[in-house]
Image (cartoon, rainbow, N blue to C red):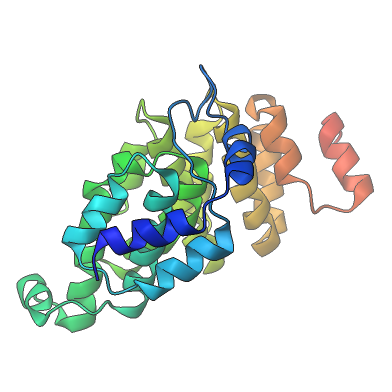
Length: 251
């Protein structure tokens, strides 16, 4: 189990045509949010299948993947980390002994620590979205990380750290706990990045599914500050008449 094998298998499934398409989709042009990101053109199903094949890859090999300039290699590393967190991993018991909280807890702590140390490589929206809630969000819920980290990340100058913060709250939304989502969304209403408006709107839409009354109250209370893109995402599942009222601010 070495990173080189993952890299070889990814390249064996690469497509020049797909590479061109995903470079456009992930905005890798000059001045765009994905500028400089390198794609080789591997489909999501192929990348996921390869990730699962190498799901026991040790941290020293995962480090080579997550620090790679190739997007699909970073994506594979994150898919593996999510799997290892969810399953408690297959690390040696020494990690658990050092953490002092049992084998599963120790394994999850090790994965979390690795993720946080390498978050500078979680640097496109799909990389954030596939990992933040499943690792950081769940770790906070599991008691392995203080929720204060979200309040630090949400004011970061780095776009992707702000996105990690708000997307991490998805795990809490799924548990019916919306406080983190509302608190961070309020702090992000003035964000100048459209990607953040979409992320906030997405989380508010998911919150609405769990508690429409509380989410609508949030939107009404902050209506003048809610970016239009965020609003459209947030109210997407409303019945049409109500959705139109929210678009017009006619509550």
